[in-house]
Length: 124
Image (cartoon, rainbow, N blue to C red; front, side, top):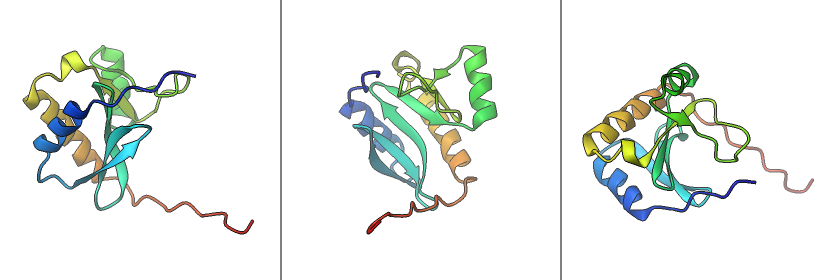
């Protein structure tokens, strides 16, 4: 099993500052922070250590990975997340660049359906 990325509080705070009025809510994600679209509760991006995983849709993510602009987001080390691509820390040092990509994910997040609640198996 791969080691989980270590939480980067400075990156979390930076993203919160950039997205002060955005329709997102922050939640824990495997020891790191993730942001979810408020109206449908779908995860749209996550701080993964000092990198940022962006939910862009399969087609867009695949194109960016194939072009070498981003790399696959593979938190488990054996199964990359299909709709996500990872921006490395050295790529997102510019706030404007990072904000542009976060806004792309927010726009995509608005097209996603409402997240379905998982059934609890109490009393089984």
